[in-house]
Structure formats: C-alpha cells, structure tokens
Length: 378
Image (cartoon, rainbow, N blue to C red):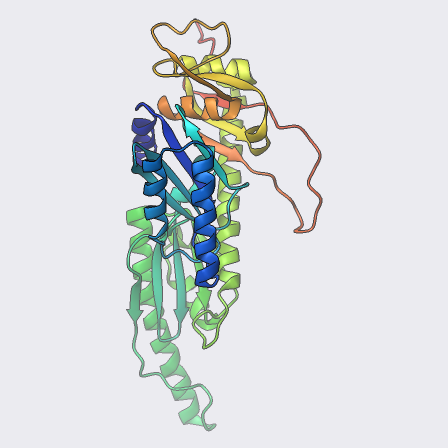
C-alpha cells in the first residue's frame, strides 16, 4: 500500500519525465555489461532526455544491485534526479522501453505488481536451516535467519544390533528437535508478516519432520520442493522455479478473485470496456483495475490530465484540469487508477508449454472492480 501511495505522489507532480525499463545487471563479462550501459545511455539521449537526466541515468547504472540474473530495472528521472529506481528479480516482461515527456510510462513498473508479495523460503537439513523472508522484487527482505540446531547426532549407517537401534533413535530425536526450532521461526514469520506461501527445500527427512512440526496456519502455506539445496554442489534451479511458479499462481488467483467479485450480483460492481472503465475512474470508483498485457501495445489513446479526474476521452468535460498529453489507453487507465488509489493488475499471457505458440487474439477489454455499485439500490 505504501508503495502505491508513493507512486501516486510522484505521478501527481509535474514533468517532464524520463524513464527507462531495462535489463538489470547480469553475470556477463564486465566488457559486455559496460557495452549494454553505453547502449542504454545512447538510447536515453535519443528519446530527448535532457543532458542532466542522461547523466543521472549513467550514474545510476554504475550502482549494480545484488539481484541474481536475470533481473529487470525501472528508473524514473526528473530534472537530473532519479525519483524512482526499482529492481525486479526475473526477466523483463516485454521489451526494453524508454520515454521522455510530460507523462511517464508506468506499465513496465506495474507489470511487476506482484513484486511486493511476501513469502518465506526454508532451506533445511537435519542439522538446522536457513530461513528467509523474501519479496518477489528484492528477494531477501532482511538478513537470513540461521537456525543452528544440535549437531550431536550420528550417521544412521552403524554396526547392527541394539547399539545401532539406539543410535538411530538418538539421531531421530536430534533431527526432530532441530526441526521444531526451525518450525518456531517459520511460525513466527507467518504470524508477523502474513506471507502468501512458504517454500521448503532441503533434506527429505528434515522436510518431513518440519512438516509435522509446523502450526496448521503455516502448514497450509507450504510448497514442498523435492531438492536438497544444502548439499554440496546443489543446484538452486528447482527452488527458483518453485518460487516463480508460486508467484504466478498467486497473481492469477488474485485476478480471478477480482473478476469474480466484479461479476457478482449481476455485475453491479463491475465495469468492462474503455468507456465504462474511464467513466468509473473519473468518479474515483475503481477499487481494482485489470489490464490484459496485450493492451499495452494498443494504438488507442486517452488524454492524461494534470488534476482530477486525471483521465479523459476526446470531448469529455475536464473541469479545471488541463490536458498533459495523449497517451496509450492502457497507460492512461493505469495512471488514473494509481492516482485514485486503485490497485492495478496486469494479466500476462500464459504460454502453457514452454514451446507452445502464442495464441492469436486481440487484447481483452479493460475490466474493473468498483468500490460501490454503479446503480445502488434505492
């Protein structure tokens, strides 16, 4: 919520603005990274950004955030000052974009709208675990919590007989004690931060013991990943894929929930289509706006205004507000939504299988959940 309010405060200010949506720093050789930075600076200058804005961008590019590659970055600059600099884990959503003018493009930023979603990552072993509270945008939100359990267990492979059984029981007791401590940490994070899911990877027996020790509220959030990330030479690909898949699922469920609420009571709290959604935004009636990613590249436009009602179609009465620019319809609706306190969700294409062809279709009409019914009961 605070991030949305901050963006609204920025958008309410006057321009001109310069913005860039680019690849984040990668793991390529330094000469390749520097070549990319030069290319970004050159393209920024080509769009008409002032010399001060170009210099501000160049300085920001030398500060490379420690987010694993691939990543994306959005920078918003005004009067030679970086007003907004956001980094996102994961690849860009769409092409690199650059712009300069009275109204900044914000959809590249909003397409990462799930990036504020919190989740917990647990990489556990029989001797303890590392527990992290993360967000999709920045990944680790704070320093990892290392749970160092007891290490006085012994390997299960021992000589046979009564001593072997005793050693097994002792080891199980130690492992169970350690996972109880891990569960205490996870349960506390769930209570205090309300994450959307808890991803658990690591030793198979440790994962089983942890699952038994978690509170029901935490257990209901668990996404189990069958990979031992704490082993020497372990590959974290499966863990990263599980996190991305869980975030995608959460974003899809959030959109479906909004559309279901909008369709309830014969659609009395819903608006669909550019005209209906524009009208609702002009009344500050929109609670949540859903945009199809394919609408981003539509040639249709609306007028961005410098004050309420923030957006208008040609011929609309705008009161004392002045026209800033004619901008793409998706950008205009998203800007008005942010400025009126509505959330914005972008419905990305679902390719199905990795090699599946892109479905041939037009962008869906914008849809909105309204704060109150269009025709309230008398």
